[in-house]
Length: 268
Image 1 (cartoon, rainbow, N blue to C red):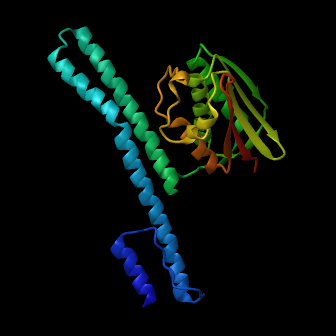
Image 2 (spheres, helix red, strand yellow):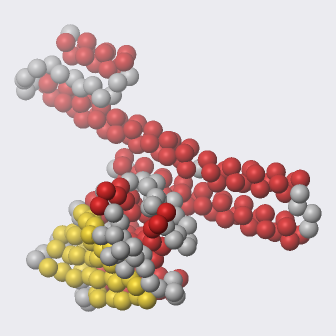
Image 3 (cartoon, helix red, strand yellow):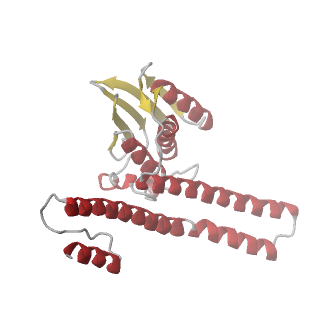
């Protein structure tokens, strides 16, 4: 009866943060209660992830949606030449691409939080992955001086796609908000793999250093040159990918002294 009463209470209240508490014991009823508590915890995480996704999406898509609507209305009323129509279409296309990228990243977050993001680990040469991303980013950012200190032959079991995204996001962040010089390093020490990306930009104030990992947090105006645009998701994605590889991210930064983002992950 106590089990049924507790179960019905959760069902009637809809409060998935509640748990079945039927006291100490190790019989089948208590084992069943433990199984239900695990299920409730998983459901709670999934519903919270869905709620967060809905909240984030509705908040962040509001601005590009408003821009698209206003541009369409303006075009209907004022654009009279083919050139004006082309300008309007270019703005709409840019905002649509921004929305598409944002939704894709939000979906990735939701999948990772729910544990449905399948990590395809395989033995790979991380040195090759980092070098390839560096070469690509150097071509995309010719105004930035890249320096690479990548030790060769560093291998581990990683998801190649996710690891490439982690490196790309770190370098992209450095190019957007850093200075004119970016250094990327990869080395191994005492069974740990270290990847760092260092810039010589204006740096991040101490009170904001924890916030950089939050979704949609944007740098203060003095730090946001933001040449390529940003939706504030890149570093959050970096941290989640690091967790999937049993790694952790750290940040060293000081105003006017640049920033260094470092991934530390076990080699095996």
